[in-house]
Length: 380
Image (cartoon, rainbow, N blue to C red; front, top):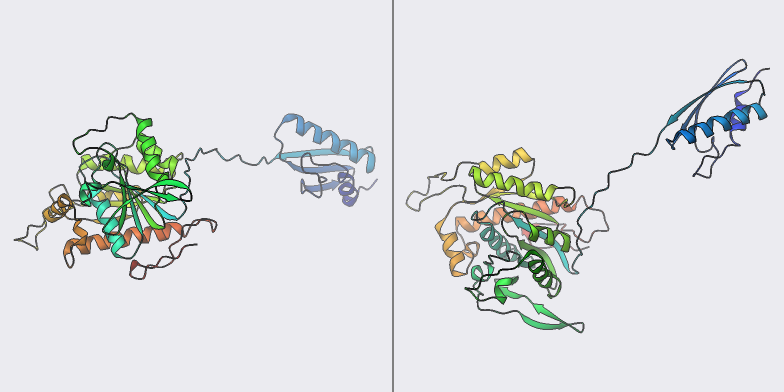
């Protein structure tokens, strides 16, 4: 008897693929049929990898071809298992968005003393000068410095009523809305809290405050990688992180760990880039000279090694330290090399945020669409 391929296909339509509700031909499980006289060779692809599923499929094919086509047919069945690859589960730490806050940038450093808070303060005031609405959360619970840097050490946040709820009103200075644990402690009082207490205080400053509309919230994180950092990532959907380091090897080793922390699967916060602070020293009497006291281009080389953007270098300048000590960030000084350096750094950070947000799904409400003079921001 001559066996027809069409008859075999029609017979296989009687077999339903488990879990799909379609017959074997309609679902595409039958990939090939070859006829050689009274021999029939059928190639099948199934998703179920179990031995029981393969055996059941073989038996059903044999039965249906013998019943519907030719009872003495010699049948060879080749079964290929094509199970969908299970993606590894990643337990991402995702925080709650705060209505009205478009972008949240965490500023971190692997170790203390590299000028992280100084860079954060000057980024904030430069963004405000460019026309952005800016907030700054001082999350360095054990060493808050923003109240001094913004000359508001004696201020206290007021309570305001928002939709029937009492909220903290951030202190405002130089166009930046500011909250810090330093507002709630005495100047010479040490904060001796365990992790859960510190995290609770942070959550209060984040969610029990009336931040209003912000284009950017900057978070000045403590040095290192620890409990406070995890609390922030759990509490807020951080847009990206900026890592600050000096060029010396001991600082770079810790900066590398800081970048690795944000890139862990469980945290998964994009690193916007690395800032090299105290990159070189230029004395006032020798303005053309550069002295690389802590080493040369260490953070720049690290950014290349880690394949993250290099945001720029900041010089070691006495006026930057003095400005922070008197509560007027150095970037506020007009027509100075320091102001220009912070403007370039800020534009680079904003550009990286723009590039990062272009890859986000349309449902995300974080979008800067223009940087003309770094002032207009379109919110979706």
